[in-house]
Length: 102
Image (cartoon, rainbow, N blue to C red; front, side, top):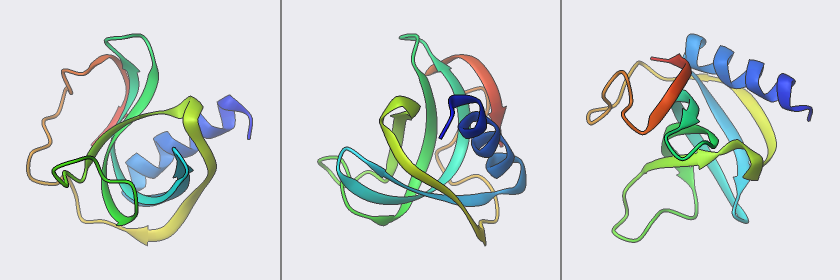
């Protein structure tokens, strides 16, 4: 998928509060995207809450910052979520530039 198309899909998924499905680091993930932009380290990424799949971090935190260059087979699902999860802060401090956020 072309980078521009992926960016548009992620931004629209955030706007419509739709789940994303993809492979990341060899693991299938289904996530609620909360924020999309450029991290303070200069990488394009999404801040997301994982609701299905494998590959959670040690300690079991469902929150992830995932760089878009490692996302494979992105699909915007028809399933929606109700809004920001507890623990999400608008204006994500991990992002230097925000393209879209809840």
